[in-house]
Length: 147
Image (cartoon, rainbow, N blue to C red; front, side, top):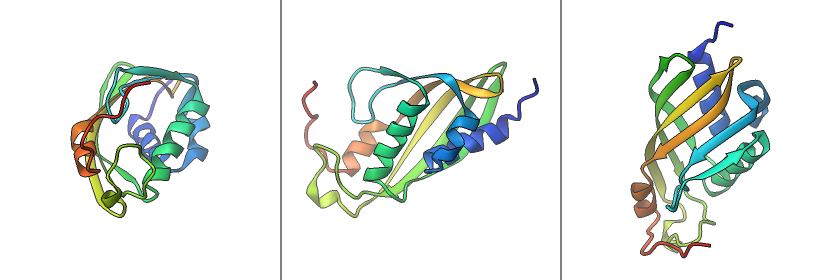
């Protein structure tokens, strides 16, 4: 099967930009993500398309105008593709530990996604984002307690 990695990468970005109707066409039914929470803590695995949609919906609730733009890539190696992205959006509130004064603030952050492709769909995802910069822009003074 020939894979159009550029189109797949753009569809992935479009999902994060709020077009959840693309999830079934872009993400494998056995999807697994490996990502540290944006506000810190140990990496947590999540499985399935529904969990991905819940994750995307959650970040979009806090940043309704969030826009992801691919800056580099996709860089392809076999069944893997790597993307460097830039995200920006206006904070609407709702993240525990964020400063109340951060509501309305424009936030920018960057990250790198590693995607494993199976049968033309994204089957596995490793995320790395600049969480400290993200938290600083939201006025975090301390890390919320775990658990």
